[in-house]
Length: 212
Image (cartoon, rainbow, N blue to C red; front, side, top):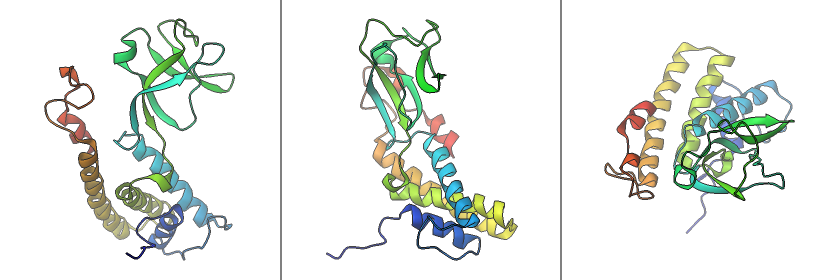
């Protein structure tokens, strides 16, 4: 079977798609010194972060362990968008938030008013990761690229007719992304597969409505 070179898009492909949507010529590299390329790439990365912050099956992990350092503090990796302590591991022992400590992002316990966690060597989190564009599912690459094209078009040319066409394309591609999500997530109306013993973790239709 032959290898299809365009089967999976790259960040360069996405930037070129954005450039062409505003009437600019595509480029061969992202290192070219061009304000249009810079705007396209920054817009793409902004939208990539915004979409991933919603939390999807491909970038969400439950009960992910992070070891405490020698000071019994938990340093947050820089590719974490959102995190919360897993309730099945820690109950309501802590009430945590992200907070900077001398320029280092750490887990802060609002309940204990401290960065220090005693009587444990690690904490377990439900985490939403920031995934590199190249590693995203293709359905989400297409959706993110189209959404970024619409935003960049409004910023650079402000053509209402073009914006309407891109908006229609964006809606269709988001539907495909949601279809991918429902297949990968294995959702069901009664319970999820990970925590079947807890009726409070049933699939909630309002979460789907919120994403429409």
